Image (tube, rainbow, N blue to C red):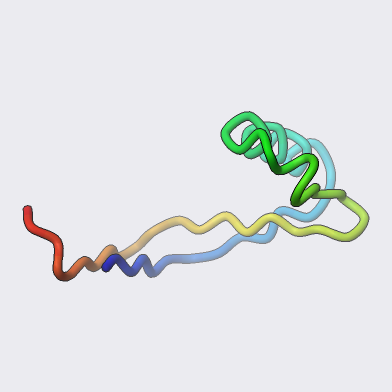
Length: 59
């Protein structure tokens, strides 16, 4: 398993929201149809990792 701890930033509206949404849509092409993100009712959470833990994974 993996656990990531970090600080979170809410991306709610504006150019940064639209740019981040475009990156997500490029990586996950099903999102526009199955999980559309609209500035009026969606938030993107950006997590900046401070600690990463893993267990049960051979290195």
